[in-house]
Length: 193
Image (tube, rainbow, N blue to C red; front, side):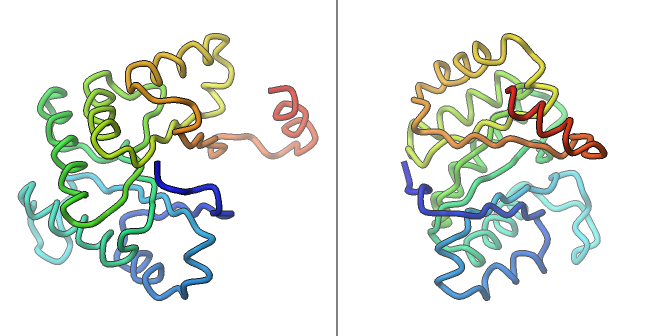
């Protein structure tokens, strides 16, 4: 697993040129404290510069090239939940696997993310990549997931399928859907979990 223990700040970056350019110009001291999470854009979104739908190979070249150019060989988390390559779930999982494998050729050190609702086919592609690279694995848990009394069992199943140990994973607690209007109530909920 790539070292992530020394990072003290995680930033979520949508796959936008300006955000990746800003990441690139950070000095080494700041880069050493950051573990970015790249949220990959959907393949089906029309490319703004080319004014057309790009091919899958063009998508790989553009996006992985930007990741590598902005972050180099440093460790980064990849959130691929918005990245869909095909409407057919089997082909989509195959293409996700190809995307992850191509990231190594581009010099990226990506930690792919699995969430509780990730399809088994996508989980299989991510797990295969994890077993080949040993970069790490991220598990994204939402507040709704925390309400599931069988969450621990679900996470254990993900780890067993991936053949990963808990210490090989990064847990992402996504509070985006949290109702923070009553901070005391939220703090109590968080403390109980």
